[in-house]
Amino acid sequence: LHGPPRLRRWAFSTLFLPKVPFYAVLDSFSRERFCEVFYRSYAGVRLSDLETWAAEAGRRFWDRRLFPGALRQLNDHRANGHRIVLVSGGIEPILRPLAQMLAPDAMVAAQPEMEDGRLTGRLVGGPLSGHKKARAALEVAATLGVDMQQSYAYADSYADREILECVGHPVAVNPDRRLRKLARREGWQIRRWRHR
Image (cartoon, rainbow, N blue to C red; front, side):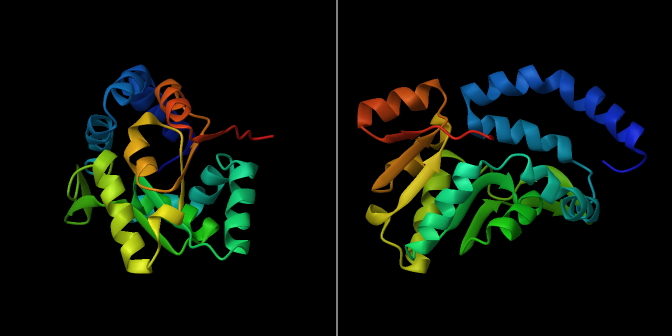
């Protein structure tokens, strides 16, 4: 959203906030369906506007959301010579500032469908979630020559269980209830990361 800050706040609170409970319930039911519905709200947005927002505000946006524990863990992996791959169901233009901050060896993200320089509200190939996300991770691993049985994956949602199941060292971080239950049953590591 562009324009005066007051207008941007109004648009956010008027258009997005009333839908938050609906989005939360939908996400708990199906991450794939959530992505389909959520990204419809991007229909008509100019890619150039989205890229401008990402360049101007994206770093501040991600700075507030990154856990210090996650950054320390990434540094530990790098110190051990591990390859870092960022896999997300988020759309690539919004994730670009995060990728610039984390400097992964590769990034896999959802691609927004475009028409005449504007987002249609649909995703190329559909949402990147569940088995699609796991398959994408396996494809990147093959390209990089990474052994998935020697690899780590970190996730906080039961919706990402497939990607955790395809590595030798799955880690549930601040897991939701269903993922915590699955992690305990499977003997997966559970981590708690805090902002402070």
